[in-house]
Every structure is written in structure tokens, then in C-alpha cells.
Amino acid sequence: MAAYEYLALDAQGKKKKGALEADSARQVRQQLRDKGWYPESVELSTKSRKQGGGFSTLIGPKLSVSDLSLVTRQLSTLVGSGMPLEECLRAAAEQSEKIKVRNIMLSVRSKVLEGYSLAKALEEYPRAFPVLYRATVQAGEHSGHLDEVMDRLADYMEEQRAINAQVLNASIYPGILSCIAIGIVILLLNTVVPEIVGVFVNSGAELPKPTQVLLQVSEAIQNHWGKGLIGIALFIIAIVMFNKKPQRRIRTHRLYLKLPLIARISKGFNTSRFIGTIAMLSSSGVPLVEAMKIATQVVTNLEIQQRVSRAAVKVSEGGSLYQALKEAGYFRPMMLHMIGSGETSGELDIMLQKTADAETKSIQILISSILSLFEPLMILVMGVIVLIIVLAIVLPMLTMNTLAG
Image (cartoon, rainbow, N blue to C red):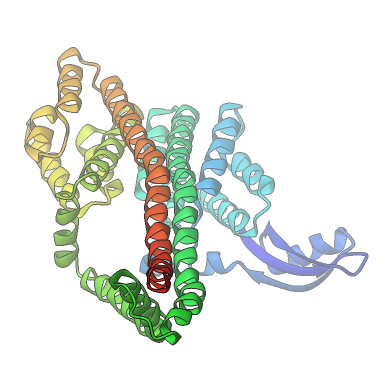
């Protein structure tokens, strides 16, 4: 069976679009007619036609984190209820309101019906189900505890989504405040300042130095704002082009690790995600070395990624995880001590998870503190800028009054 996309008219003449699973397009048309609908077109799902190979790896369908998390949670509940896997996949597809998700789940179900394992069926959609996801599912299938592993995987994905959403939500207000502040300053320099200062210029009076500087800034913004925008755009494009090659991008990432605050945040996020991913995979039955190799893919900083890749090699050669990560150089002493304690006590999985949670909370607190300080700092900067503008306008008035007196 395969997934087919259809376009049909219902009894009221409204267009209906969706996907159904069937052996042929003819069977889909018959299903639609049984519902009282008139089928206009029935085609094999484009996702099904693009299955496999490098093609799907490059431009295959992709699921958002929220969609994948929801599907994983549904599958975990359904598998835990004792339903056959193919029925669980069908139910998850029917539960989804999005055609893309439905098509993918039905195609995965078709592969399972052909005799493939779930992990193997998921390989047809590498962009929708990343390596981390497929490795965890495979471990669950091998251990015979797929429902528990899927539940743990859903928890992990929801936790990562919550962290990303928290950081994003915390940065929205400062971002809006910054845009408004810049907009107000540009508006003042473009409209208010030229009008008021123009009166003093026409009077022939000599302007104070702050007023002259402000007038020059205002004229520069009015006359060259287009060039400024083009310059900013070219600068951004140059940075993007420079970072196209991995050899150059790794130099940029090394620079991030030397900048104040940015270095702490980058190290914290990457090391906590790396350790948390190892904990989740290892507790699901994935061997430690394999878990480390998979976890390197969640590390976004290339410099740290290279270091943890070397650490995985050292562990595969018989070294301890504690020593390998210590030599990697970017893990905080507290994290290393907790991991070493876990190796010694035989509770490595538990200590890895505790280490990741502690580091994640530490970074979240740091980011929240920075963003909470940003608001009063932005207000202070705005106040100083407005004060300078007001003084530049008031000083000529005081000068003229002095001369008149």
C-alpha cells in the first residue's frame, strides 16, 4: 500500500484536499465516491515518489520540531497500549491535520507492512527523522521496549523545544524595544532636528559644536540612508560568503568561544546538549561510543564538535569518558566531576542527565539575567541619546538669548 494525494468535491461542491492509503489510485477514487465525493485528481504522494537515496536527503520532506514531537508522543501512547505497529502508524496519520505529516506516516506504514523495521522505514525520510531519532527508535526495537524509548524520546524533544521557545520568548521584548528605540532616534534626526535647527541656521547665528555635529549626523542619514542600508547588506553577505566553507566557519566559531558572555553561552548550550543527548541515547540502549558519535551532530559549534569527535575516538580506544571530555577542554569542572562520579559509581546515565540539566538551567539563568539587564540598559542609552538631541537644540536658544540680552 502507498499514500495518495487527492483533490475532490464534496456534496456541497466544496474542494477537499488530503491523503489516503490504498493499493492503487483507482481504489482511492472508489473510497472518495463511497463518501459521496467527486474525485478531481488522485496522484501518488510526491513524498512516496521521492523516497530513498541522496535525493531525499537533500530535498525530502521535513517535519518541524513540534510536529515530530507530537507524532512521537502519539506513537508512544499507541505502542504502549499494545496495538500492532502498523495500526499505531495509521492512527497517528489519521490524528494529524497536516497533509504532509499524514503522507509521511502513511508511507512509513507502507514500508513497515512490507517487512521493514520502524527504524529502517524512517530512513526513507532523513530530513523528517534525524539520525538521533532513528538511532533511538532502533535501540527501542532491539531492546523490546519501543514504547518506553519513544516516550523518553518525546520528553527529550519537548524539553529541547521548550528551551528554544523560552530563549526566543525572552529575547522578543528586548528586540522590539531596540527596534523602536532606533526608529525613534532616526525619526527625530530626519524630521524634528532639521526643522528646529534650520531656524537657527537661517538666522545666521553661529551654532554650538554639539548642534553642528547633530546637524551633520541628521544630513548624513537623510542623504545617505540608502547607501548605509546597502553597506550593511553587503557586510552581511560578505560574512555569509566567508562562512560558506567549513575551514573558515570553524575560525568564526573559535572566535565565538573567545568573546565574553557569548563564549559562556555557546559552551554551555553545546556541552549540555551533547551530554543530554548521550544520556538519552545511552539510557535507551545505544552503546556509549555510538551515542557519542550521534550526539556530535547536535553540537552546532564546529570547534567543540571537532573536540567531542576526538573524545569519542578516545573512548572507543578504551579511555574513560571523564578523561576524554576533560582533554576536549570545553566542559566545566563541575560537569566533569559529576561524569567521573557516575563512571565510578556505575550510574553514568543518571549522572549524565543530571549534568545536562544542571548546565542547561545555569545557561537559562544567565540568559535571563542578561536579557533582564538589557531593558534598563536600553532605556538608559535611549535617555542619553534623547538628552544629547535636546541639548543640541536648546544650546542655540540659550546662545541667542544671551546675545539678545
